[in-house]
Image (cartoon, rainbow, N blue to C red):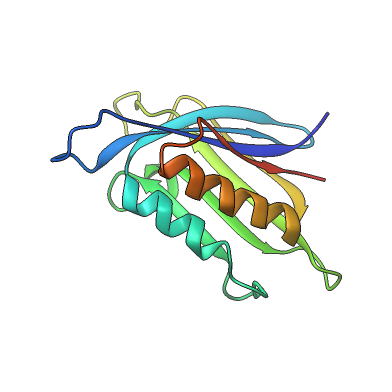
Length: 146
């Protein structure tokens, strides 16, 4: 099974609205999932720009999270973190996706948390893919896993 992460972003084109639907799909070694959340386009672009960080440090991973207040734990709907996997330049991507809707108790009915490895060249391709996606010149940005 191939591993990886994909982003799709759909904005309605209203110049007075900064929000669009960020659709996320992840395939890990053992688990996979799909989800999404209403996200400001600026936040997606900013996350993409942060992926240019080199080197990414263990105590300062590149992260983005979207969800409901207080933006932690079960209130997160989409969370992506990129951190070093080892000292050879491999990276560990951790993705958390949960239902957009709750069952009334603040707990998701379905969720997935999975990880996969990647590297800096593939991360750079993903960074460029996000920029192209947010410029409206592509339908999808993909991060290839190892």
